[in-house]
Length: 535
Image (tube, rainbow, N blue to C red; front, side, top):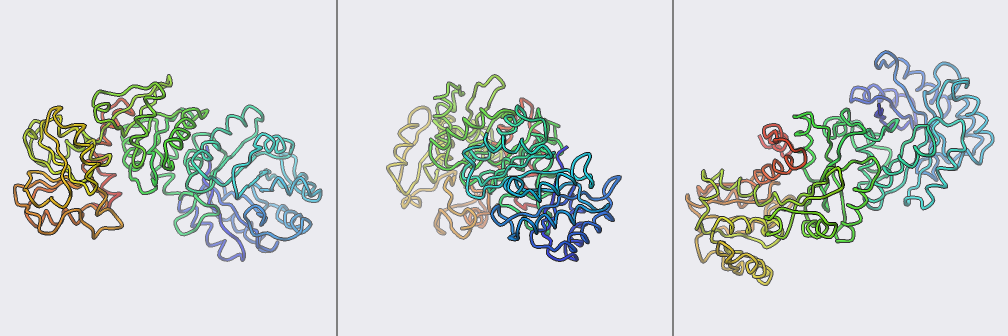
């Protein structure tokens, strides 16, 4: 089982002694004592105090780390000084369960090798286990095989830890792929992490890859490296205790993606039906080449077992092209729309593209109106915007014979979209945004980001727009829940459709595609509303 470790920075004894039981209360399995700036007497005092903290059938276990400034820490003393600190810490019954030493320090210092070789391992004087680590705060090392080979030469080591700074999601996937490479070369335990948001996948999935431990923050503390999730996130959101080798991985691809509540919704669904899956954020920079490289790496990563992805801004048109160019299939409606927001990965490597946006939007709209989709026939609908969300919604409305008018500040883009769908079944035309007040429509749908957090005071419509009690107003923006546009609609007595309804409905359809099982709507809805603080 992968243990969750909370780093605690030690300078003086009292704050560290206070922090250790708080970490345990927050859910930590162990703590890492970062003693970069601590004197030997302080280190020994804290190590002694941790034996009084009960955890399970024993006491709190610790990793002793004295990280050098060259690898992101604060220790700047000599190797002889460091050897002395290790020697003092390893004396007597209070010795740490694990001690971390940097590979470069081990190689250059005979004194440190002597102290730690004598103290660690089954025959060592302390009973501690040795972790040999290497950190690169600039990039992923280009010579990973050479680094691993050098690590394996440290026969006293029980665990190897390799960490680097991630510049893209590819660095995070490389970290996960390295587990298989390590297993082929050495039987000892291994941890590989990519620092920063682009590499967060390496931290969220460490349990799936059977890492010996992972680092997380307690609620009241900061992390020791960029991108460290909290204990609560790992345990309550990312299904930490349910991850295993067989777990299928899903995620949301976008840029940015940290704000997405899709992980909350889908992981709640997995938990509700006890499905062996986990859903994570996948931050992929704009550009088709970046999208292709990321998805190729995810699909090819040994042991990852991807099941599918949700696709959001700015990659929906990239997703359709990717599926087609890689020989995948898609349903007729997705092909008709010309964009997808879901890719399913089968175990045999084949792909299927879906668009659940249009169906999710129509379900949200018709439920609020109290009609089925045939009730949209000949309804006059004003769609604001001509982007990916508008494209899916226009296609769905036209398929049910609504009369759609697209309003957009760039009339050429709106006209191009209208031209693709006009006359196929329903009527679709394009009009400049400034003409929005010239006619009263049955339904208004905002498909622009205007009014989205943090710009919550903005509205895509003027205050004097002629709405009444028969008007239906739908804002696809879900954060905030009640946008300025919807507040205006409510003041006029109009029928209001919240963006979160579209979000939930399209997620339910995705979930069934991912799992092959009916979506647990109650659990997924409750999770979405709680994430948005909607009572």
